[in-house]
Length: 234
Image (cartoon, rainbow, N blue to C red; front, side, top):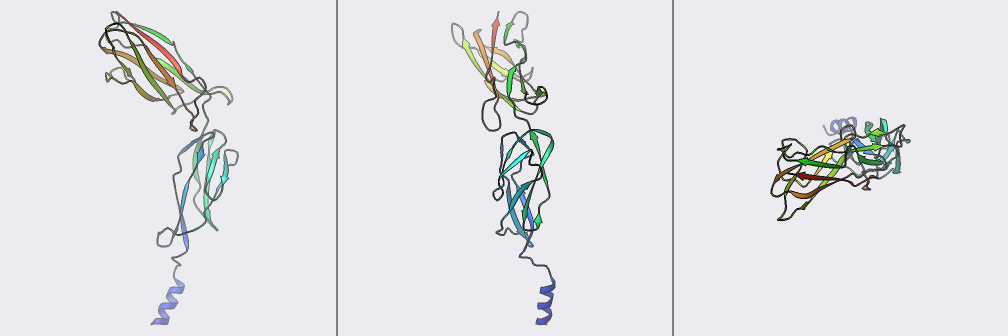
C-alpha cells in the first residue's frame, strides 16, 4: 500500500509549484506621464501565495516605458485610441495580457463662455446665474481634442455687501439649493459647468468662482485657475 501511495503521489500534480499569477492594482486607464505600479502574487497549486520573482513587460513600448521589470513600475508615454497591454511572468508561466486605456494629458484649460455675469432678481426670481463653463483640451494631438471624464475643481468666494454676508450656492443642477461652496465636476466632451444661486441674505458685492484642473501627476493644467465673477442685482 505504501508503494502504491508513493507512486500515486509522483503521478499527481506538484501542488508546490507556481501555477498562476494574481495581478492587482491595475487601473483601467492611465494618463500620459502617470506612473503604473501593478502588484503581482504567485500562487501555488493550492491557491496559496508563494515567493517568486515576477517579471513585468509591455507589448506596447510606444505607449508604456518599463522602468523596473521586477517591481512593475511603468510610465505612460502617450495617449492612444488603442489600449496598452501589460503582462506578468514567472519563468515560463505568464499572466493573461491586461489592457489599459491610455489617456492624453490635458495641456490647456480656458473659459468656454462669458467670464462675467449679472443676475437680475427682478427678471430671474430663482436667482440662477448663467452657466460658468470651462473647456479642457489636449492641443498636442492632431488638432485640439476635448477631454472627457476629467475632474475640474470649482471653488466659490462671496464678497458681502454692507450689513453682512450672503448665502450663495455653487450648483451643478438647476434644482439644487444646498449651500455648497466647492465641487468637482467631470468634463463631458471637454466641458465642465456650474451655476450660482442666491439662497438668502443681503445681496453680495460679487461672487467669484475659480475653476482649476490638474494632471494625474499633480501639476496644474496651464490656464488654471479660470476666474468668473457674478453679480446679483435687485
